[in-house]
Amino acid sequence: MRRLQQVLLVAGVVLGGVIVGCKTEKANTEPGNVVVNSVGMKLAYVPAGEFEMGSPIDQKGRAEDELRHRVRLTRAFRIGVTEVTQGQWEAVMGYNRSNFKGADLPVEKISWREAVAFCKKLSKDEGKRYRLPTEAEWEYACRAGATGAFGGTGDIDEMAWYADNSDEKSHRVGTKAANAWGLSDMHGNVAEWCSDRYGADYPEGEVVDPGGPGEGTYRVVRGGSWSHFVRACRCAARSSVPESYQLRQTGFRVVMEVSE
Image 1 (cartoon, one colour):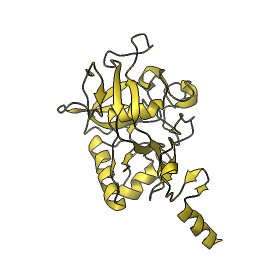
Image 2 (cartoon, one colour):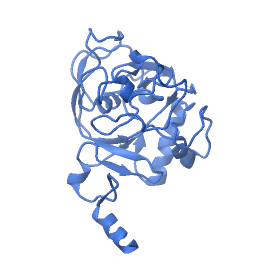
Image 3 (cartoon, one colour):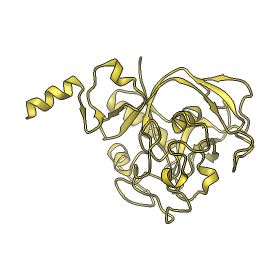
């Protein structure tokens, strides 16, 4: 049996719905295709592409900093299927100050700087490049082709733990419906740090691989959380938080860069 398992791993066979040790380019470049890293983190493939970032002016709950504009992402990437869990965080960083304790709960009370430090350490441990998603990558992955206020089924109660259903606490990751690329908790549970500094004004024309303003003391947070109402959980909703803040409703998910 052990020999058979080794053969299957080398061949890149699908085990339990996850591509393990896959060697074929085709399998690795299908949207949503999942690999698992050394700390048990599932990462889904997101292809390069274009989308409309922001929201239309008639969308309910829309804010002024959501100017709709065309974005082109020229590089594919992998992104965490869920937020980083406390178990994964502890395995890499060796400590856990989260307010709501549980290995399968999202890590929170993590500053932007600590999230960046996690990515750097995981990169060193694995010999791959992990980082926070850009704001554009985050929204592109959240939408997974959707154009409305929410990805996936479009139903906030099916997609998110938020103020109306969370019982004022975070929940085990991956327990709400996933979007079209298999990503869970993009709406609600905990809000998520992005790499960008916050800028209130998006560019009006098409942009390619945007990375946010070059200056600023606040970082972008996306996705809403267990404590947020519907408007803050939309695909286009934006928040800004000082990078040193450690909030019990804020965590993160990672991007793993891929070479093609």
